[in-house]
Image (tube, rainbow, N blue to C red; front, side, top):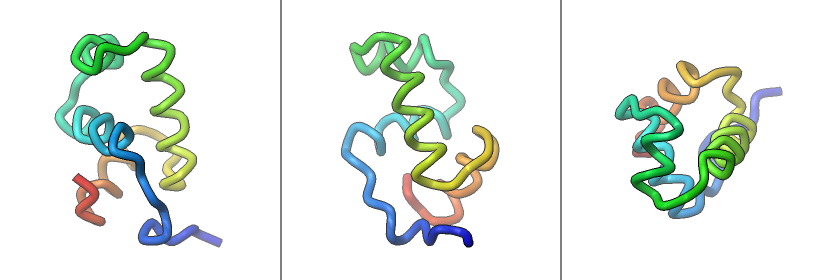
Length: 70
């Protein structure tokens, strides 16, 4: 059972992170831009993967673009 992405609510910070991921930034680059620790970015990324039912970053980016989340 695939969870509908439309049912998922992303926080403002998750949306910013998702935009950075779509733009191809690395976790350290994102951490620097968002003024957060790299571990925090890793945790946010894992939560996004889970929330959007994505197996990896490539699928995460595809979902973000297809669903116009960014």
